[in-house]
Length: 429
Image (cartoon, rainbow, N blue to C red; front, side, top):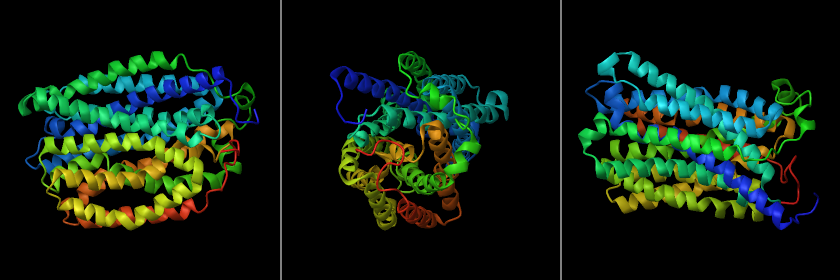
């Protein structure tokens, strides 16, 4: 098709495909993030210590370890999606996430089996990291390929609507449990409930993904370069490096103002854990709602301009925002500051998957997107909490703010390398 005209049936089919893929994405990210938001309650069960910061540091280390599996997941599932179809890759990734969540829900604690408890927790997170490593690239690829032309930014933004929705649901479940259970019950057994919910939801998602139609063609799947590292780097090394460059900063600032922010409000600003959860619930909800609007903005001003605004504003505003949040006393002011930060991040997240997918041809698209994202995410996104908490224990917390700022400046520079139009998807956006 060379025009942007779609029949009613074709439009409905594509919208259903977006809904089907993104619903599974929501479940995947709920399962992955519920670990971060429950860590306050189960840290002592797996890492006995008198210092709460040390306990959180250990759980953050396991969180980061899950990210180290992402490049492997990006490679395995990217190859699978490019050679055997996007649909197969999406179904297998959500099945693995289900297994990882169920494993955590059933784990004995340190008091029961000693050092085996944190070791098994680590194993479960590695399985989940492998799953999520494959999920992002395949979902981004699939959604970019089914999105309606001329509205790609808007429709592709739903990848992060559901990714953030997964975070939001994770926070929401914790908030509900905080209202229904006592602090002692949450620490004793209540923290297991979200992982059971996630495992059940993953099975439902698996059934939904079975109804998706395949977007890759038999011709591209049979291409000799399809899903191969050699094929990716023979002609697309520059595109890979560009994606790697701006994803590093994007991942770091995203995790700084989402998963780490709840701990930052409690551990640094001295806010009550329940209050911090409410603040993050409100901020994440607005962040989720923002995505389609920033996606539509990219359809008007271009993906490259959105990315340049993201890099420039992130470089200028990160230190002032984090410094203000460090001493914030009003929950409302904390909410406003975090929402402002997330507005800046939205220039990137609303089009994150699409702007990557537009850099690669279909035979290596899932691999290129998934692997570049996973490598940058593992190195910079997954380590965000660990680096922040580590610097805090050394009395150098402010150094973390400048670290994020430097990575945002690098993201800006790499965004300058972006083409003004999509290289491999249709140019009529």
